[in-house]
Length: 148
Length: 148
DNA sequence: TATTGTTATACTCTATAACTATA
DNA sequence: TATAGTTATAGAGTATAACAATA
Image 1 (cartoon, rainbow over the protein chains, first blue to last red):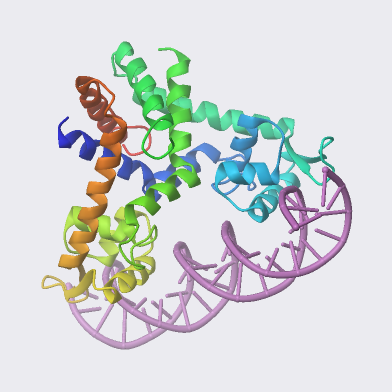
Image 2: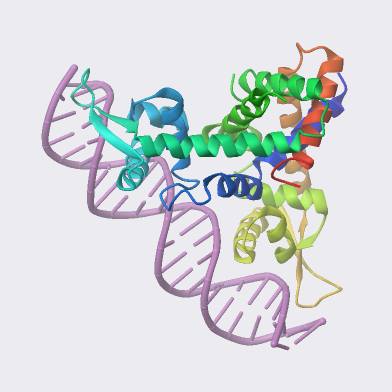
């Protein structure tokens, strides 16, 4: 394999992970969804959307944050009506964080926005090529060098 | 184009941009390179490696940061001997930030590490497929929905 | 006037360490 | 004992606003 492949992907990842890129993505995705939805609280919404109601400790592991951080972000979202706290019937120490209808609507909006932006930029690609690329990117990320 | 393509790429991007993923990448890349090289200062090293000696204001634009932030990060790197300040011969208001040999060595190490990790995870791919994927990822990022 | 690098200030977000309640 | 959620605290990093020097 040519060394260039690794470096070419490395450069692309570098651009993707750049602060300015990340901020622009989050800004566009969360625009107009209220003050409570921003780069900080978005991972909580997104994580709960993926996994369903979950404790702060469990969610902390997933989004790479401390319990106390999840609590603080959850409180912001709760005050905005996007999240509610429920007692965990299986463990009375725990509190489940669950999205409200408004919370689900917000995360669905961001999901649609992101997908739409992506599809716009793929519009000029041959359809088969775009499909292949999507599959490969998914494979690369899920079984890749930093998530395996 | 199937709506799935956008969502599949969106999910992959979501994983890549996750805090835990980003921190793990930076941790592995900068491991053992000294206290001055971390997630915070890495973009300054990387930016200077790409563009050559540059003013704090110019670099700020590129890495999505305020001038004062670049100054603070540069000072940390300067104290560690990875960066030096030079007067700009073309503009006596400006100070050029330039990598030292040690700075160049550090960023070269991180580049090789990242490329090596990536190539390891692509080892099981058909070589042609990896090459095509690299080209497509590069195109997607450079002319994509958030960098265009 | 505008822009440079730098510094002080106020703000945000974080992990850590406590605390109480429950397993 | 260990783990749950929460809160107070200290630390790190940021943008903003100043400042003097130069364009």
